Amino acid sequence: MPRFFFDLFLGKYVVLDPGGMMLSDRLRAMSAAGELADHLFLSRTDLHGSGSWIRVRDHRGKTIGGLDVDREPVAESAE
Image (cartoon, rainbow, N blue to C red):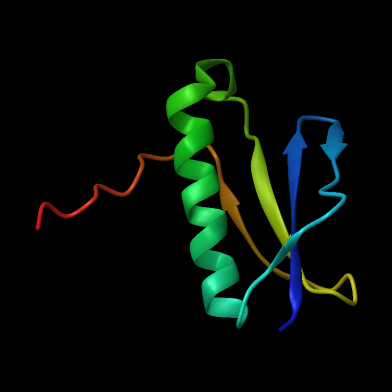
């Protein structure tokens, strides 16, 4: 199972993800990044309007995508 890393860009600073997560594929990695972005949006109001974003990298260090933290969280479905 491949490992993916989620780095947080905060203005001129980058917080590198040292351990990453083992996930089955890129789609799951982007989904995990979405959950992280939602959590940061709700818990870190200081990031609102800051232009902060999450970069998703594969185990070789190749960027596979990114998501803005300053976005409305995806609502969970009520089942």
